[in-house]
Length: 157
Image (tube, rainbow, N blue to C red; front, side, top):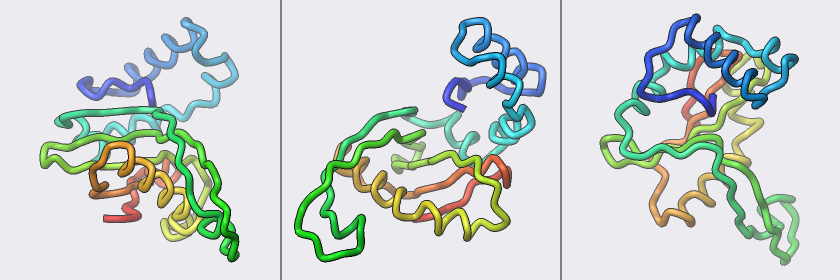
């Protein structure tokens, strides 16, 4: 997903060509190339997120972040210490309406959107907080993109 070009139109052949290019450049291994779900990638390029990204003012992918949070937010216990949390935000962009949109890709095999939302809600809260602090701008929408379900799931707005 990280290597897709937002301004490009994709079909199954161009997805295959991209995978072959990544393989040739040794960015991915033959085993990884074999296991990539081409249809899931193509499905993402048909999503609302992808369509909005085509017109985005700014797009950032795979951005590391560090944030200090109270331990009690993570462990749900009365601990007064703070914890340094680090992670990588899969994608964020600023759309034509100047809204900051946060997206996290998930490949989990889940039966419902709610299961995915519940599993990753806390992680996304941290990502949202880190992004807002770093950019000094409020995140307007937070989405999970499920490759298994083939759709975006809004977690926060």
